[in-house]
Length: 263
Image (tube, rainbow, N blue to C red; front, side, top):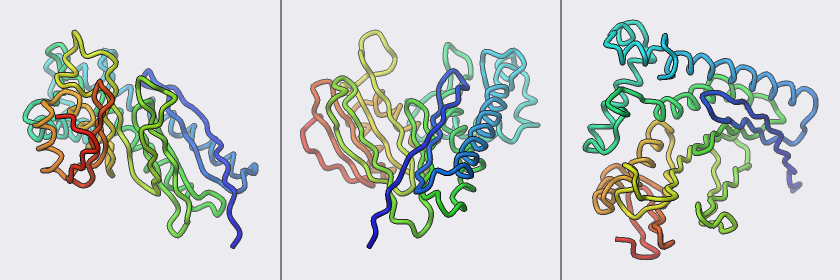
């Protein structure tokens, strides 16, 4: 059996004050494939630009800014805003208030919006690329979140190395994903921050939805470690948490398998 050799051309767009990487796995990066990648990047750039216009708290006329000023019309006239707002309320309820979409007393769901934005751009702009016979895998990510998919019937898997946040030459674990998402949260210094009420310095959460894994990645570095363990079991979470001493805890579908004790 002939082994396929994959190449991984990629492009980067900058929106919402961060870089987004668009990558494909292809066996033949000819001009047609590269044009598809370029076209997808252009569509993603425009979609992210619109989302930023709607949700940036720094734009006076954004839906978020209007809502912060007491204008309730975004809830009535924008399905996207209603979805984000309802998702943030549900997240606060599911996490017993540990997750919050408020900053400095104002509604600011920017982290949730970024997760949702990747989901939206991936589904509308990248999934159609898998119809091309020479494209087996697609990837969209920002600094802390990754979403990938593989053509049905392909034996290709994405190899994703997770590095220690304080020892960048040390690989903590490697995931092989055909389809799915990864959200990561890193805390360099717990002192003087509302984040990091436990001893966790780095958290990686796997799943199928970035709007969910992004929330749990943030909660995992905020919650009391025993409370987080209860969340892991109740919500069947998968991933790994690493503390400041380098000890770690693995969990898969709600089952915790401690390699080292971090409680």
